[in-house]
Length: 201
Image (tube, rainbow, N blue to C red; front, side, top):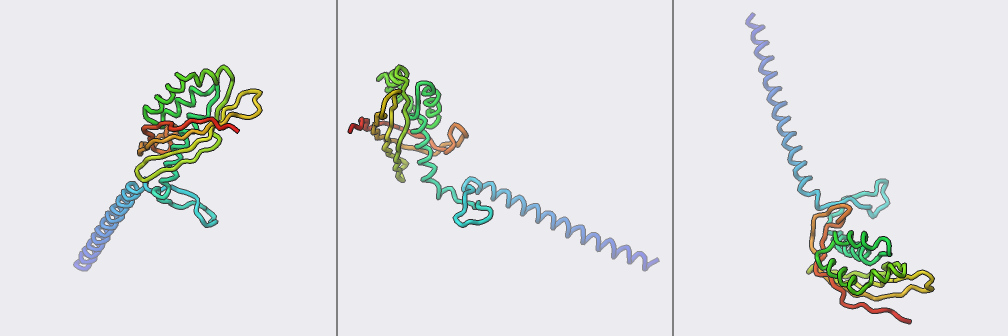
């Protein structure tokens, strides 16, 4: 009987140690999991997936967003320019409305200026379409930019489109991204045209 009690005691002690070890292990694993999830949450906004430079089977790798800063900035500015200047008599109001998602009140002021000059009325009457043929954007570390645009205005039955050189300037800041309204996550400020000249042969 005494031997049986000893065996039961040993068994209970062993089970107790096993249970405590299991609990401790579970706590350690759970803690590590929480830490890993937290670190992923903290760092998730710093990286994006992009195509890797080598020709691997799965050509995706983590790229630090800071490396793509210039691409994001110019992408946002280019998107505004495309929406604001690539228009026709049917879609110009919708296009310009979309462009206002990317810019402060300076965009509305420029639109009002074009309206006062009768630009959109002339396009509607003549059934013209306007598009950006070429754009070059330069940014700096102070979040300012300058862009040179080549804009074409084409009328029906017109052999060659009229070309206009437009120089624009402004600044930009980070802004909460909102697809599809603001996919790049920036906002343009103090946008202005500093030169608007027709290119003649």
